[in-house]
Amino acid sequence: MLSALFRSALPKYGRVVLPARVSIRTMSSSDGPASPYATLAVSRPAESVTHVELHRPKKLNAMNKAFWREMVECFNEIADDQDCRVVVVSGAGKMFTAGIDLMDMAGDMLQPEGDDTARISWNVRKLIARYQETFSVIEKCPKPVVVAVHGACIGGGVDLITACDIRLCTQDAWFQVKEVDIGLAADVGTLQRLPKVIGSRSLVNELALTARKMYADEAKSSGLVSRVFPDKEAMMAGALEMAGEMAARSPVAVQGTKLNLLYSRDHSVAEGLDYMATWNMSMLQTQDVMKAAQAAMEKRSPKEALFSKL
Ligand SMILES: CCC/C=C/C=C/C(=O)SCCNC(=O)CCNC(=O)[C@H](O)C(C)(C)COP(=O)(O)OP(=O)(O)OC[C@H]1O[C@@H](n2cnc3c(N)ncnc32)[C@H](O)[C@@H]1OP(=O)(O)O
Image (cartoon, rainbow, N blue to C red):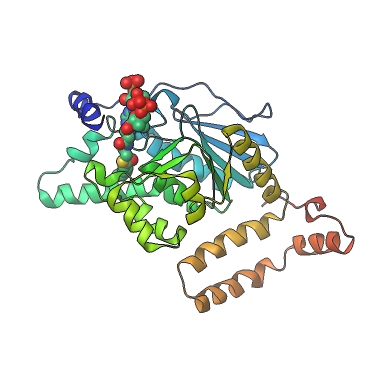
């Protein structure tokens, strides 16, 4: 399969392949405006919830050049969108994603530009940093991101999901850190984030060094996903319900929680506590605390309080 893909990719080296615009498929009828992206379908399935769907189903949502750019544009917009409090990411069609587009990306990877080794290396470094940003934007986005995986999640797909905050999958899902199979050390997040997600270093090493597939049950028992659903329909309903729970709560509290959890992941407990105190010295002054406390005193759900946009 791989060699066939590369063979068919070879004549295309150096040519920019522009993907066709896709029609938009949405989770519900409460859509926002038409998606400006060729590889992503963006919709608003519920109040304050944005759905980002990887949308190249005929190519199994393989990640072409447009995708790597559009994810950055899309998540930067979401980060600034006051009408969005939670994001759900999923894949259209047969599977979540077949990973990097081996045909569209081969030129960039195998024929880098530059007059000498230093310049070629410089350009490759810049290129890799740019591709890393495609998934780092998910982590940098202050809104929680729930990812819902069905079928295969290969290579770049694992880089993507490890940058998300909550991972769900269907019973038929499988995950593969495939990079060693195509001669690469994974370079856009898996090797950095997967060890923070899965407790067992040995398991991470095994998956990354052998490229073996991991199926849904093991993904759950290892902590890669927190819930497994019987099928995609049930998973999307579960993802939306979870998103609704977060979207109904104070965005000051929810976004502060995401950012501090991430900070603490990468720092000592003492540093995390210090950062938290500095964070909350201003955020505790929000009107949201009073509103939520009042709801609690009146034995109402925190979801019944109305919080301003952030
Ligand atoms: C600096 C950036 C760093 C990023 C690194 C990322 C690395 C990776 O992602 S490594 C992983 C790369 N992916 C693969 O190796 C998977 C390749 N695909 C497959 O093995 C099979 O397609 C798969 C098992 C996923 C599904 O097989 P199935 O028989 O169900 O479908 P196919 O007929 O093979 O595919 C349907 C059409 O999709 C095209 N396609 C599938 N995968 C890719 C891909 N990765 N890149 C480009 N195109 C892909 C396939 O060619 C078919 O297209 P068509 O012939 O036009 O119908």
